[in-house]
Amino acid sequence: MSSIQPNEVFALVDCNSFYCSCERVFNPTLKNKPIVVLSNNDGCMVSLSKEAKALGLKMGAPVHEWKELIKQHNIAVYSSNYTLYGDLSARVMQILREFSPEMEIYSIDEAFLSLRGMSDRDLTAYGTLIRDTVYQCTGIPVSIGIGATKVLAKAANRIAKKQALGVFDLSDPSIHDEVLSGFELTDIWGIARRSAEKLKRLGIHNAKELRDAPDATIRRVLTIVGRRLQDELRGIPCMGLELGAKEKKQIISSRSFGKLISEIELIEESIASHVTRAAEKLRNQGLIAHHMIVFLHTNPFLERDHQYYNQAVRTFMNGSDHTPEMIRLGIDGLREIYRDGFKFKKAGVILGEIRPKLHQQRSLFDPPNHNQLDVLMTTLDSMNRRFGTEIVKFASCGTKKHWQMRAELRSQRYTTNWDELLDIEL
DNA sequence: TCTGGGGTCCTAGGACCC
DNA sequence: TCTGGGGTCCTAGGACCC
Image: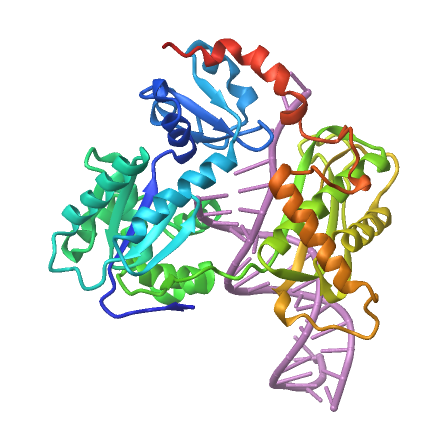
């Protein structure tokens, strides 16, 4: 549902250090202080305030490697609070929607707006108005980049992030040569380490050189994806706005274990829990899945350990969103791939061939209580929604959760261990 | 000791068919 | 020298994104 309009102008609005900014909204004493927010399992740093970046902390780095620095500078450390971030994101998006009839929510903290037909206005001034309004209404600071294509808007956004104004307009082609020649390859949206290495071997070192390289060369080394990107850098739009919600193609639920696990009973509990979560996601979106992949693996970081990775596929002939049926097949798949004698690190499920439940084919072989199961699932979901997650659940998910992530087990220790790190001056 | 989780898209190559 | 070739479907793996 992406259509490309002539004379398009895109604005990319991106929240600054989004998770950190969310924490600040509810705790203003954190303003101007270094903050990091950790990944799901308190493993890596996934959001850093600019003060934290200035101290040398790196996005995506394992937090345990930086304990000293964190302690030394009293950096505030938070586990992720996705409920909070999702809520604030919705408020930001709601405000953005008022500034353009066409908008694509690209991620939890980014949206593209179409500014087509506004080129007679001062786009920088319009961007500034958007930025000020979002901040005033939500307390979340954003940066805005403007350009003729999504890739150029992304690039402009990167520049905006470094400037006090927080808005950068790259819609005038006369400044492209200068801007793009100072733009590193890996800073281009869609180019990461691997592609940058290939380009450098060809003597291409920045965005301008990529833009001006021969089409056939780029097609050969970066496939059609790279060729499109090249056109986008030239101001020829290849990507339109995705209006409306995109249909999901798969739903994943997986987690690393809090510690290495060998016992199949514990892994079965984790699989049952992942299936439960994935099935809830399906039903929330009115979808059914036609197959499920169960996977299990050891810790690839422990190179000396014997490694094992495997997956099993199970199919639901007419699609399913019924938790009990899916748990049964999930555990069946796990038993097929489980091997004794390994120390496992992670397990999960992937639901695929997802389609709207409305289109579900019924068959002669459906259990006679199929509709009752639908009712059961609906009831279960509404109880869990009303009284809290997992107020009602399946026994196979276990109650002790020995497999669960450290974040849960560690929460007590977290506050004690890191208390001094959180030292917030009031 | 400790290294996230959830997604998408593209390509190459094998299997299979006629 | 190699001798059919074109088409489809599926899967594994690479690469990227937030």
